[in-house]
Image (cartoon, rainbow, N blue to C red; front, side, top):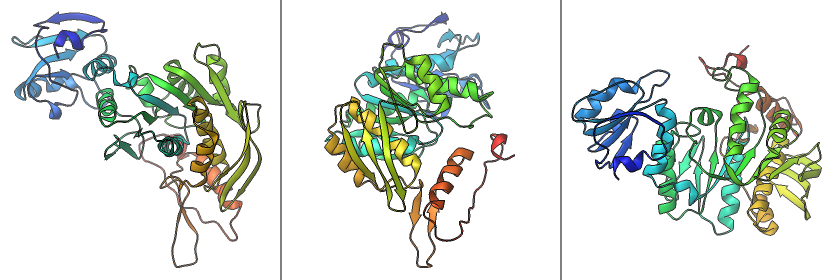
Length: 385
């Protein structure tokens, strides 16, 4: 691809060098530079990509996207105000706008993202659709699983995953969208078919200045959707987001248990086997059973059912798939043993999530509940008062 084609849509401050050169690779990590690379110099929290320009040249880089005044004869330098924001645009150009060919379903919120994307993937697969996954646990590109290093990858990696999913025949991508990715421009050029909001509780306050800032970051997702937004109206943060986005051209739907919503659960029963409830939608009612205990399962599956409704997936396929799910590894996962002890492993790492799983266990525990948990060091101090 010609360099000038890669730069379409960028607000460029200045250019030195030739824009008519061929670029066959883009990178923000100097270790991934090869011949004919456009190297994007990112000023990160711990490192500055501008310091690795010489190393990138040695490995074959021919052009550089920078936000400082740099000029080295024989190489092309494109200066922009913010290289991180510009990188999303360049990546989208390089991989030929892949999200426009893929039904990307974005899920954001403090808790529930992995469960929702997993349930969605299972249902869509039952409907003979091939589904990619991007999330906390793993990335699935339609062919193989790749270990995930963050909830949402950097824009270059993300757009590459999208293109690989398309090449591997994927129809959809169920994707966890972190607040970091929304603030740090990782999904700036991603087109989402659906956006789902789960809930908002204190999290990442080492990065966001307060809960309002955290909510505002999450809200950014719902301005990037084309078909529908789906919001948990029982959640205070969700209710505020709904008020802000309900007048957008993209339709907004709600789900909940306590407040009136488009998708509701009534007659809820929770025990050690799982949850059952009467589903109420805009056009039908249905009895639902999911073999994953916990009130959070009710909320997660309501969001999933609403998404499937927007995608015109039959209620029979949805009900059958949810009824036989095995849930998500590490999400209220029961560990079998020969000691006569019930052991449950869960990812809960926020006050709200921990309270939810303990209340769920309390609902069917026949003896004392012993809890072992920890808090990440050098992170959000509100988690370890």
